[in-house]
Length: 182
Image 1 (tube, rainbow, N blue to C red):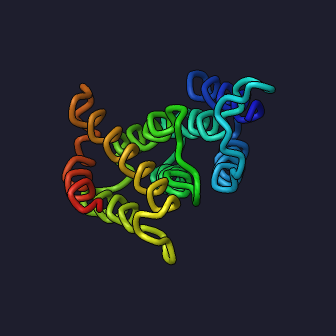
Image 2: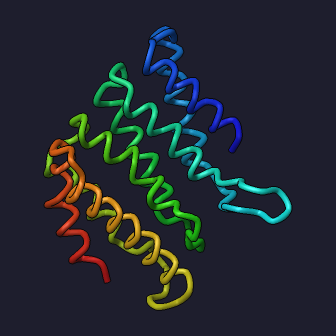
C-alpha cells in the first residue's frame, strides 16, 4: 500500500508539471490498474501495523491518473474498470471509508468524459448483479450488497450535490442502479 501512496505522488507531480514520457505514463497506468485489480489484502487499520488500506491508497493513485489530462478516454475507462473490480470484493465488507475513496477516480473520469450516459448506466447496472452462486441474504451476499450500495450512494451524493456539472452524466445510471439494488 505504501508503494501506491508514493506512486500517487509521482502521478500528481506529473499531472501538475509533466515530466514522464508518454510510455512511462502509460506504463504507470497499466501497472496501477494491474496491481489494483489484484488487491487481496483488505485491511484498513491494523492495531499491529497501523493503516494498511491498499484499496484507499490505490484509489488515490487511480484518482491522480484520472485527473491527468494526458490520460485519454481509453485510459480513463481502464481506471473505471479497475475500480469496478474492487467495489465489492468477494466475502469482504468495507468499513474504513473505502466507498468514498473508490468513488473519486470514477467521478473525475466521468467529469472528463470517459463514457457517455448510456455506457455509464450499463457499467453501473452490472454492479447491481450479485455474484453467481452467492446465496441471497447470506453473509457473503450481505457484504456484497453493503459495498455496492455504499459505493452507488457515495457516487450519487457527490454527483448530485457537487459543483461539477460534468459528472452529472452519472445521475440517470445511478438512479436506475440504486432502484435496481435488492
